[in-house]
Amino acid sequence: MSSLQNKIDFTVLVKVANANPNGDPLNGNRPRTTYAGQGEISDVCIKRKIRNRLQDMGESIFVQSAERSDDGFSSLSERAAGNITVYQSNDDYARQACEKWIDVRTFGQVFAFKSKDKKDGVSVGVRGPVSIHQAVSCSPVDINSMQITKSVNSEPAEGKSSDTMGTKHFVEFGLYRIKGSINVQLAEKTGFSEEDAELLKEALRTLFINDASAARPDGSMEVVSVYWWKHNNKIGQYSAAKVHDSLKVTLKDGVLVPSAVEDYEICIEPLPELEPEIIAGI
Image 1 (cartoon, rainbow, N blue to C red):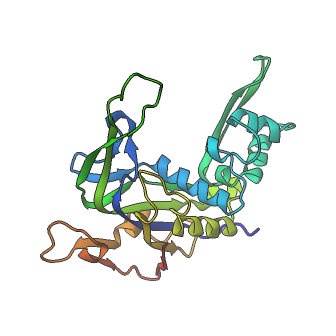
Image 2 (image 1 turned 180 degrees about the vertical axis):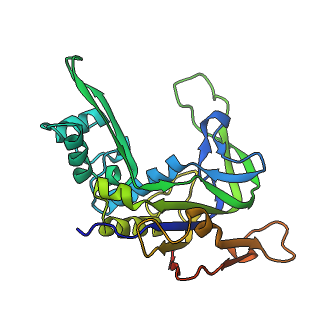
Image 3 (image 1 turned 135 degrees about the vertical axis):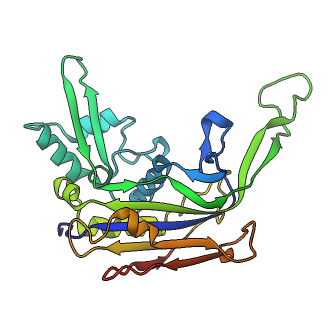
């Protein structure tokens, strides 16, 4: 595997139509929004989807969802203890973890687990090279809610119980922007390679494959495009902020409430000697 030599910045545009991209458990699972009314998707949610896609692609994942566990372990401590049994130091532990799991060498991980006898344990931190911002919609979003009901009793009862089962919330339409960067210096420490960067790009392009649910019906969330800036050196020709800001997404004249991607003008402000690769999403 070839080591990463060039800083990378990326942006992903995501279309949401009649779906709940990321519910807030402290607010009745309503889609997350800013105080200005723009939709949000947390960075943790995005990383979960990336991990799932990498796992689908055959990569070893440390932070697996319980329902997607593919190695027989039911907790992170069991997975760590079952795979790293002998190590000489904290650095050696981190090295083995990075070699074993792509999400550790991508996002980093804190290993803080007690041993069974509670006299000893492991406390190791790994800083990952890939940073992900929370996604924010390009315009304020409208959130609709509906009551959902059931037609059968969940438990034996006399007569029929109340029909009301709960409430579903969804974003009518939103164009969300995910921003991220890959730091070469941290990639050198974790072993994140050029091949890993290509896997990450493919995971972003196909982010919502196998992600359908009642809150996100198949086709309700779609990656419109991935913008991938590869600098010509390790630290980058421009700051990440300047690179991300070079992608301009604005409403077309006369559009007050967007209902489709076509309602936006999407253009790239040229940065000398830094052209992005533009990949259509799925």
